[in-house]
Length: 137
Image 1 (cartoon, rainbow, N blue to C red):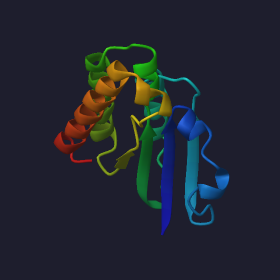
Image 2 (image 1 turned 120 degrees about the vertical axis):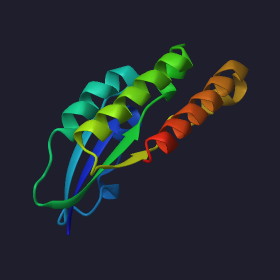
Image 3 (image 1 turned 180 degrees about the horizontal axis):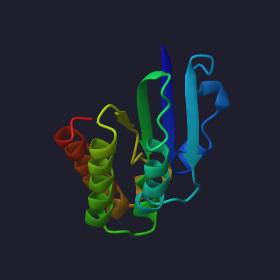
Image 4 (image 1 turned 180 degrees about the vertical axis):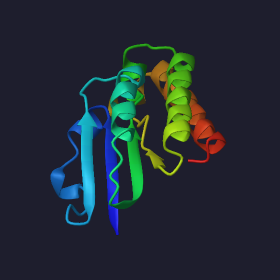
C-alpha cells in the first residue's frame, strides 16, 4: 500500500538525510523544512502539506518537528503551545484520517548549560504531549 509522508518542520526536517526517507517506491514523500523556523513559521507549511492528499495513498502521515527555535529565540512557551494546538485542530478538522508524529521540540546540546532553556524545553514538551493526547495523535 502506498503511504503519503509529509515531513514538516525546522532544520531537523530540512537536513533529514534522503537515505532515511521512507521507501520512495511505495510512498509519496513531501519535505518542507526551514532552518531556524519557529512553530508559528512552520504552521503555514504544515497547512499547505496537509491539503495535498494523494488519492492513491492508503494512509497519510504528518511528521512534525519544531519548537527548539522558539526556545532559543525566547518565544513564550504558552504562545508556541497555543500555535501547536491550533495546528492540531486544523489537522483534525481538515484531515481526520492523517496520522501525526511529533518529534519536537527536541533537546539541543546548548540547552544543557542553560537552566531557563531546559525549563522551557520541559514545559513545551509536556504541553505538546498533552495536546497530542487530547487530539489523540
